[in-house]
Length: 440
Image (cartoon, rainbow, N blue to C red; front, side, top):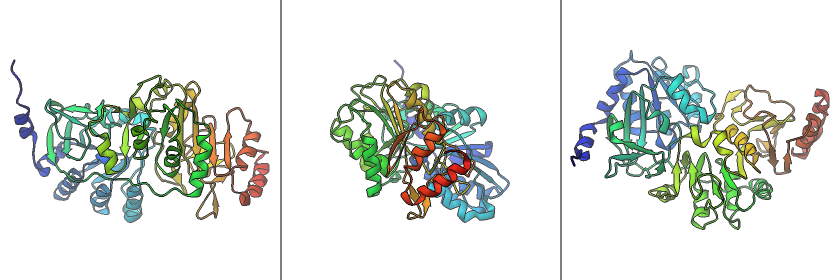
């Protein structure tokens, strides 16, 4: 049987950064891998190409921008060459907006996560896709590692695919494999992956988590977002049994529960015994745990976050955070002071999917106040344009003052219940404003 020499094919496609980025001369739209998969060397190469060709224009699409992206591309220098359109913003994106001022090139693009792969391949022509991958295996396959998300969708639709091979990127399973025949150019850059380290939980974080844990039973399947409250929930589940995982995010706090057997997927009704994710953010130990681990499977967000897929697991539990909630139950988890702060992400996907699951529950958690207790996160009406979760979708809402199930409550009952979740010093004012609005 005649076989292709994969080593020769690899060397044929292996180039320097400048040669790889030359493909951008034939492109209008550049899509970058998300978060950990955002390729730093290729980003720097893109900046070099734009500097050398001041007439070149690019539309840049991505989610959760990296520090390297903000430093090299999200700058006033490219105000006339680059339009950056993130579907989810990171702290680096927000900092770049502040630095750029009137020369800001970032244009936030609202999108729910399970639709992003479709948007990046149908509504937007994917001319070039750049992402970080694990080294090629003996069969000619690279792995998308930490980021199936929209990458697994875009990589097979883009006109040109350029990968940045990094030996630190874990090899993961599911729909993360990409064959060398699907790749146009390869560069190598073996730098440490971006790490997201957990912060110590506060007393309030633990109080909120304890209220949520009361509703989590042995055998439930979990989705948890990023942050102190989800981590505190996971930390409180050490004595639970036979939990499952079908989560947008795979995080460091999940590793201990898998290693101890608390999360084993035994009673999942869909993808039993598999820990399903679409993106991973964590520390080096987590990336090493993921590497070559057949129980951890990554699939595109178009599948993982699809409410019709989420609902297939009975007793699905979703835990996410919010910036503020109004007295009707509308949730804002993406806008602050009238400006985009993060994005819709997959929150609404899982709020809807979990409630549609037989026995499922979704929780929106938030501290009752912000700015050291000076501002209430519970407001009479949302003031901005962003409603991440509609009042019809919101299920359980949790603060340090308790947990309430909004399903089945009238607007008047909701207002009274939500006011009781507010800090006591704001309750009288909220009641007064609720009466003025006719909510009570």
